[in-house]
Length: 157
Image (cartoon, rainbow, N blue to C red; front, side, top):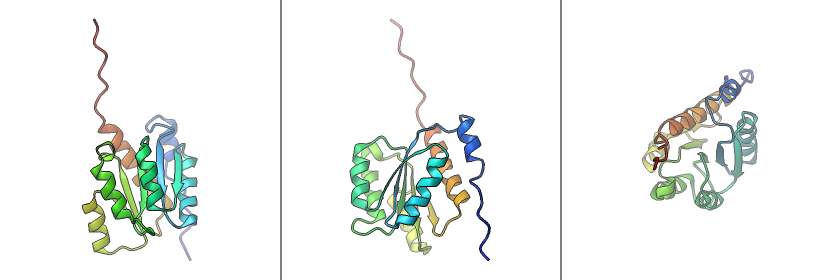
């Protein structure tokens, strides 16, 4: 028997307590429509704004537009694969600090090592448990927010 479905661990409470900014924008890229839908629903249910696409080409177009706080990216995409999307993002100064979570149905050491070597920040193997995925996403968002430089007050004249 499969394990019972688990709720997203305390992410609603974290969002409502102000620990995470509501309306953070997440790009989900996966060629599997069911996976896209499931990840989108989980993230939207805790107040994140989610844009979901199915190809690396679409991902690159949206990345060029900026205004993203996190990229959740399937490794094995048709056409431009996830590794190439990560490499291109890391070469772009505006995207160099964007948190990237790679997701893959394969758990080979080579895939994981290649993912991190290309510039990904984390890696999750499918099928994943929803609470683990949510915890990794919120961890990346928290680290990204804490690494921002402090706001500089305007100088008084």
